Image (cartoon, rainbow, N blue to C red; front, side, top):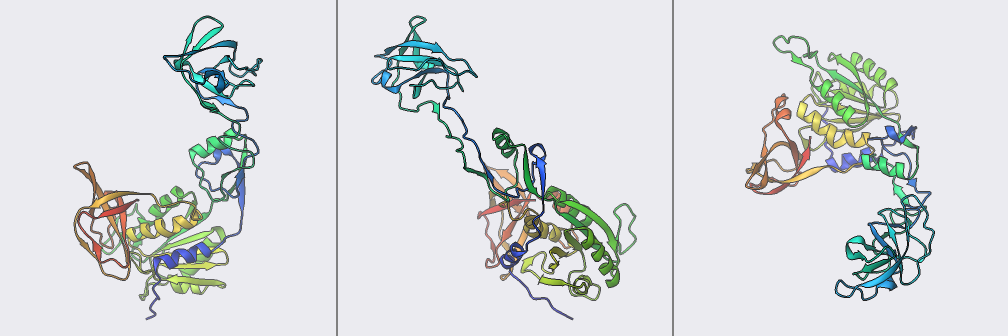
Length: 403
């Protein structure tokens, strides 16, 4: 029996980062860009704001006009004009003068600051008491203060968020280049696997992994293609794998990744001309027998049948690859609820349920058996116990990653 060589999780991530696919992009309207990954840097060709503007309702002045002013000793200024929104000021401000200005209004020439209306008192239509000293540019948003012309505003490989869309709109950008959505082929293998809508006989198991993988693929921003259930037959697996590779950028094969007599995934991959097995075996629990291979510039992942292992491998490896390693892992900090022991030498992924007690968040471990699917619905997240740790102690601060 051929045994696989175990690789550390860090080594596997490095191997995946080195794999490059052809740089194919779509050019799309920014209205359709949410969740897509930028293909190239976005540079600003304008200043934002493109004029000096007030950040408050008040009076635009030269700061020297109110040096020493206070509520006890206010200073009088003459009103030059009342500036309207969306209009260019007509009067230049001189020392001892001011102009009323609304929030967002354009600053007049000669003015370098704004006294908030709360610190002023109208004596007459032309005379205003100023009860506060101001500094140059106080309450002023100056040209290019938000974004300067030529500034890098969004980096390539960034996953577009809602506020990024607003920024692109503020820059007047209509279309952007984004990485083409990857197509992901999904294959389930096993003589015992049947469709989820069929009634299982003794020894049969409904296919849950395909639907889970389709959902996770869509959530990651890729397009899933379900190639159905294939029996434990090397030729059938090879034929379906070839079909999937012809249509997709990534192929996921659930089941058959180990080294037993009925595990044909590795031999099917190796029989494809030009294929290369990069990893067979990862020092993690669950997910140890995972296969990572490539055929040309297309990736193949051989996954265990264990539903939690499938989730772990997808979240920690496949999703990162789909997103071009553009996102950081999202986690919250919690206190571990009990003592938990594990074997040294491999990382362990443990599902947890979160519970609020005494203004603290606690993570309660959930025990997982290889065939368990219900535990994933009960879990709020999972923790990663590093390979060089023997476990987690009760009360220890840990990172909980979202499912």
